[in-house]
Image (cartoon, rainbow, N blue to C red; front, top):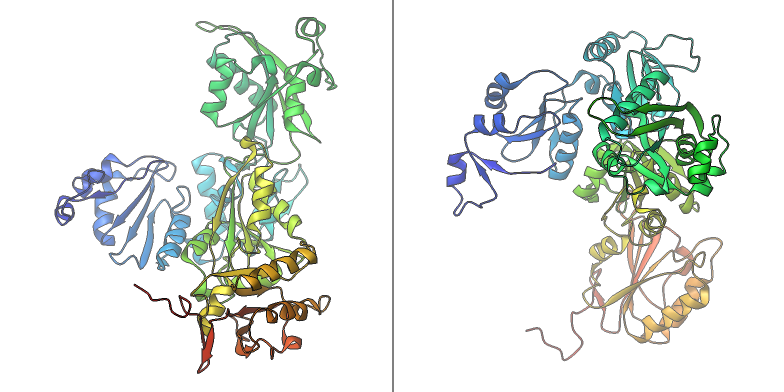
Length: 582
């Protein structure tokens, strides 16, 4: 969706010159021109004036865009229209987080701490179906405090752990009446969310009409009682990888397409093989086998092949089968956000990280780091705690959820790109096929190194480096080599992971190496529990460093040959003796 900036003529006149990219027209004209379903309009102005301007344009919840109103300072963000269906409330939260303002949410579900049943699935990659009246009745029933029966057949169940879902009644019995269903069925309940678990298998004659393929898919889904909103993509045989209608279909529907060799398809047991097809292309099945292969391990065939021939003004013939995958696949909807939470004080969390945290439905991270962010977590957001040394598992879990279509925050302390999770997560992401990759963004955080320097004065004014003393992932001889190089190069050195119960000698060895290249009185910042209530920052000489008081919650900043300390402050000059700043 394109983004444009627009101004009224009087506002544009205040700019000299007004950029050509800015739209200029009256507010009423601009709103009317850009009023479209699925749109998002952000207006800076008075709430009452905007209300009067949009009143003639309002139609219904299904088609109205999100309309947000900001005051001129950007301190208050009000979702005036389209709070749920058009995503206005969520956009308001993200915008407020970026601006350092407040999202003024007045919607009943948000103010009462209830899960917004008509919109929550978007953040998990689900797609919605059901009539407007059915959803309206469901929301009224929920607001009145009546029990809501929910039956979930597919998709991640992590959302059920959020506090705002605690009042829902979950059932697994297909005979039970439910008001809300989550799964592939098109008639499972009056209101439905659909994880992307269905895979179509398609076979067709050369140059088959796209409209015929679409009609065949619609009929197959309808016959099986399945929803088009649950389709993840389709599979076919390799010889169809250049079929114009198939490629156009994938593009139009934003579906993943997977092509398979005849030998791979021939190896799949199917209920209705064809000897004629086998004789012609080397496999007894295209549609059924392709649906099962595309859906992956654990797939179930829900609809055996159906053949549809061309009607009036159509060409060709098409075969359709439908399989269900064990888990959803919608990476084009998913997002993986690498969050640097900073040292721990929420005031040191960057606005960019706040916005990303607000956007994500699930936070994945080590429990201690998530605890520090807990005051920011809403009742509709879920946290998944991991163990300290299981970084790969956390990355895999976060990436898998994002591939399913969810918006996921993977949290590290400090900056996720400095001894954090960003590198490992990116390696795993890069190992995926391009079409299997969700959105990947790294959001910077304040590293312990930076806060330690700020607390101590200005120790990083000249060249510096960081070295981790943990030999869990790096052999100790390599760490020693880097220590020698940093010491010989006269770098200011920041030491991360300096000492633990299981690694109680490495710091003393690092101290010995550094003392071999710089004076005993070289200043050292010892910073522990930075950004937290137990924060302690002290200065010491390198020789007198109290090694036994250092732990894994400590970062050390060791000066170079020109660093000095005075009055409880440490400074490293920007140049060496004799150098002058011009």
